Amino acid sequence: MGASLAGADLRGASIRGSIAIAADLRRARLQRCDVLGVDLRDADVRGAQLDGAIYLTQMQVNSARGDSSTVLPEGFVRPSHWGTA
Image (cartoon, rainbow, N blue to C red):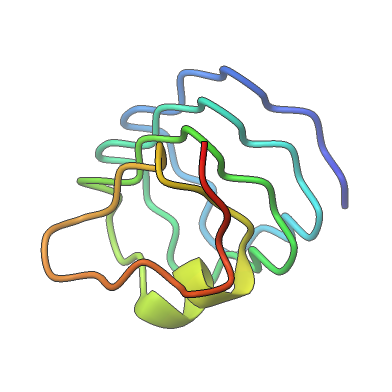
C-alpha cells in the first residue's frame, strides 16, 4: 500500500491483482499494462496515462484520485470528484 511509482513506465507490465491503495502513480504510463483486479482506492493517478490499460474498469477509475491531466480510455467518464491540473 502507498507504493511510490510516480513517473513509472509500466507499459506492457502486469500488476494484476495488486493492492495499490494510496499508491503514487502520478504521471505513470500504463498503456498495455494488465490492471485486472488492481485495488486503486485512493491511488493518485494525476497526469497518469491510463488509456490502453488492459482490463481497467470505470469502478477502478472512480476509486482513484485524478485530475484533468489524467488520460482516460475512450468511453470512460472522468469522475466528478477529480480536481483540475
